Amino acid sequence: MAYKISEEDCITCGTCIDECPVEAISEGEDFYKIDPDTCIDCGACADVCPVEAIHPA
Image 1 (spheres, rainbow, N blue to C red):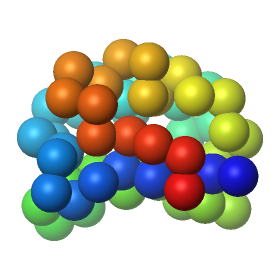
Image 2: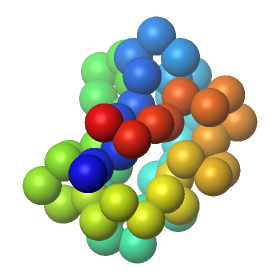
Image 3: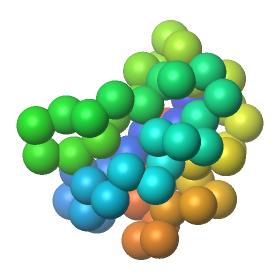
Image 4: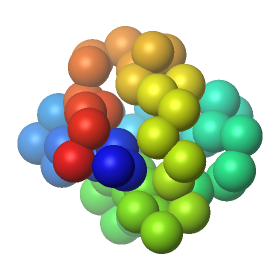
């Protein structure tokens, strides 16, 4: 199961991007996005999110 970034909670800080080992996270227009086909469900991004905007989908 891939992780997902909540549009409402993401503050576009970018902390999660550097933590993703498979580069599944990209910057969207107003928030970051996780590609569910690339995500390996490791949770590294969720562990570093300062506002807890990343959760299992």
